[in-house]
Length: 166
Image (cartoon, rainbow, N blue to C red; front, top):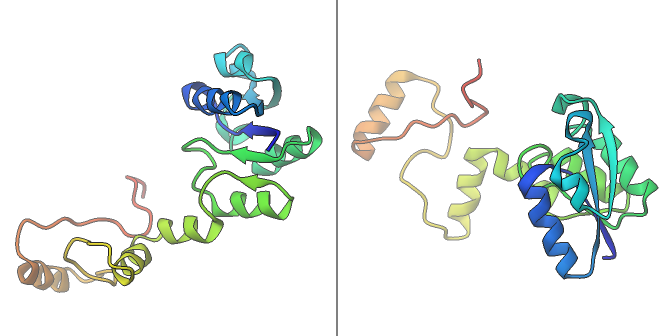
């Protein structure tokens, strides 16, 4: 790799860029209009504004970020964390556009995003997991019965989303 685009901002972007610099790799920062004077913008070898301040109009625009990378002959994109780092479609789009996605493969991101499938996959390869179910529980009475079988205390975790929404 000769040049990477860091699709993030702030301290995480700087950490990635410092490592790249030590490896002799050039860096490209992307930024929103609000971040035009941010340290990661000044630290990078090149920087490109990708949109307005809301992340939905800048840092989450995967297609725009990929286009910037292609225009600047970037070899790879590092997503940092948050934003596009857990977006399998973005990772796949990078690969489809001849860019290296520095992170998990798209199919792994999809697997990790599904807690139930992740647990099954971990058990399959011998990773210890907490006692529980391999299928979602949708019935309160069934949940109470399983909790009594497992023993208390129990942890109840949203398997498909959650995150305090809805």
